[in-house]
Image (tube, rainbow, N blue to C red; front, side):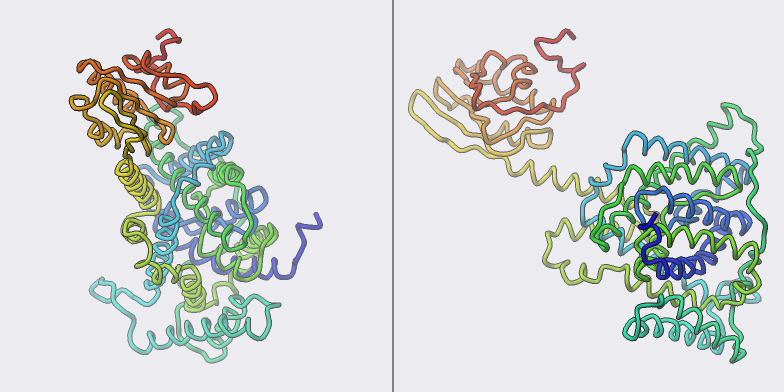
Length: 513
């Protein structure tokens, strides 16, 4: 418990700042999903509280997010909010299972260029989301920029907030700069009598405690068919965004979170929020960055942020609604500046072109579609680039050659993408009567590679060549059909690895099919 209250002042003040920033975000995402503002606020409270206490990354903030909200729109429109609550519960169950089966470890499969693209793309998305506060709907029903006077006023408040956040840490670090920026900007607006949009103009946030209820839907297979695809997509998006945010905070704080524990906590949080009338949620990179940059590192900040948010709903709505939205926009602009990896602009010409392409691609896809698609596309492209480069790097060295014997030493990885080049490396028609292929600097990876070795052995046998295969692993020997009897064994030097292969298609000789 002593560790929980370490640096309590900073943690609690940071939590209060985060809670203020959560209000307009939760309200906005509720509107996007087509539900009442309290549905978004309850989700921010419950998901934030549970993940802060039980999650795998102290200091990370979770709540209702836009990435999830855009998926919920069609479900709410076509079937209603009760189906949304049921979907959130099923989403949580899937995430809990991911945590139980320790699937969080697969986030390590995300390459660094994809991480950079994710961070940059999300920073751009946060920036673009704030531009809506500078616009209004005219008499023709069109979205246009605010009138000049109003625009100058809101820009001035934004600039004031950003100036306080940048300058205060140079004077003292005992008070969170974002909270000071919000407080000073709010005081200026109130005492100067400036006309500007406030939190209260977005929605009234007053309400009671969230109440437990079972979603009012028919419990049938037809209902499951409706909600399961949405739940699966939401679970994937929520876990990807949460685990990537966790990885980013790990790098910033030079500590290590627990991925699978975070998956399980996200699942429990969404199950609970679904039963208590919330829209579900996941990690929020913007609010997490506010928290980390304010100096918070423990679970108290996220816990206090959730409790402060609930107190706003129950007791302090009239005061919170007085905060100018421009002050919160200023805070989010500072988040954008702190989140974007500016170093990526300097190194983009120095890194391999494929990595630069992946970085830009993931950023663009994040902006124009959503995070989950961007990460999946980035991983697939990175994997294809790796496979292509590995396929090109396979080659042979002729270690010995006489009129009667030739010894090849194979270098590189033998798998599905490199087998075409592998076949071209040998010329059975022109080779002598005795050929040795040494695999000590190579590795056989999959079923395609085994078939390529078998095919090559068959070509040599057709030309009457005696072929010897050296330094293949034990399971390679068992899995090879035509070339199995050509392998020469050396128990001391033979490698120990297993080939990734479907045994139903290529059963070992010593295993019944």
